[in-house]
Length: 328
Image (cartoon, rainbow, N blue to C red; front, side, top):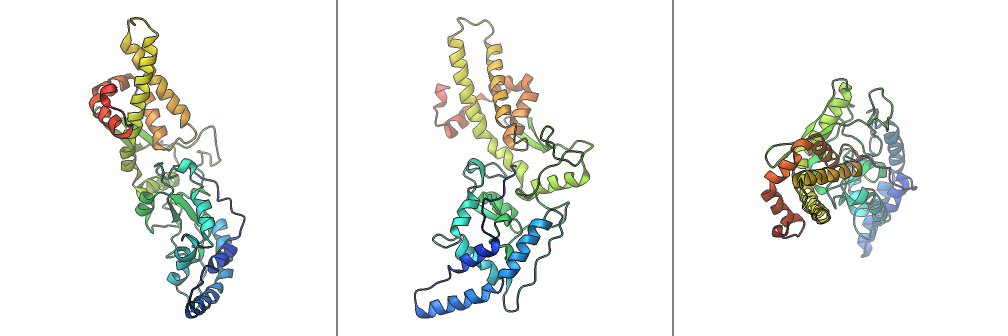
């Protein structure tokens, strides 16, 4: 999981909403007239969108946000359709904001699960079906992958113990309740099993606040992350194997008749593990960071693990790295 900066959009949500409504046009005279009537009707919600967007920013973390009642004759569905009609659709006025928000995902990775190329959807943190005044509010739109979006569905909660982490506004707190960059909250743990498997677990120290425990557990449950992380590991193992074999080849070429070949290979493997730890140290609750920490913690058995599972790893190398396993 990666927290994100708020979308770099200086336009107020109610102005974005009004720009979106300009997308209701038409070809025929009748269609133009019908869309103009719809646009004028929806414009009556502009002040509500302004009020709710401001209240959302001020109250979402405390769980005290309450949406405004809609004007008579305007249903939740009618208002929420503005998102699909003129915000997310290509060549519509709101699409420029849609694309800016999608671009917030770091390195085109889903900030929830870490999958590559995963920022293909925008999730409404509070679903538009229930909170239509926030349908095009940038702070309510999170760039995530299709799998995470499907897992979450319309789940929402304003309760502090069951509310999923808001990637723009939430930050994990240390035990004393203050931000502590030098001692971050780490809750994800990986275990290297003897067979060809990496298991992910939640690691709660005994002194962790009960509310934070509950929120972490609920967040992982909503997105089904622990099992999904296990499915992400194999390509990383395959790439690590390739890098390791390259290092072995390069190193042993420079050592004439090494006496302790296994020791050299094990040390080279651990060097790569330490590189992985450094690479992911700023995002300790990603599966990659947990994986490399586990490899470091279990380094005494890691060399044998790679050797014992060489056949399976070589199949993964062929699948994910476009390398002939016979060359490895």
